Length: 192
Image (cartoon, rainbow, N blue to C red; front, top):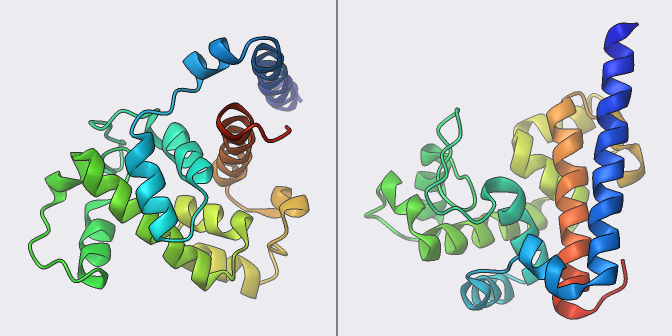
């Protein structure tokens, strides 16, 4: 019972934090842009457009993955702005026709953005443009997402995110989508 109460408090804190951020953004776009900066905007836009991805979605993904730190490392070994695993980076490089890939290249912002945009577009093609499925696969792996769908653990719909077996993935999707809405509002004037 205490665990449930703690989980409930965590959710309440997340909702309160999101509400405060949204208020700040509504009240002062300049403050919002300081909290949600858009470094590498030209590079992000270039590679997003080349891969038919919304630049604000790619920025939201980077904000969620690394908070725009090109030297970010995860405990699992993911690297760079888009937190790409070395094996995934090698696969992406092969698919893109790059034969001289080295895992440390993932720390280079240009390389990370180019590979991450390509990978997100690849997931977009596989999951027929369903952003929720794309983000779930980016976080948990496409194999897990396919298995959840095949075994009917999840419908694949955003309204049923709570069906996803991995709590981290549920939280991740919500966080990226919130960041996406904020970036779209701050940098394109879209409504929240």
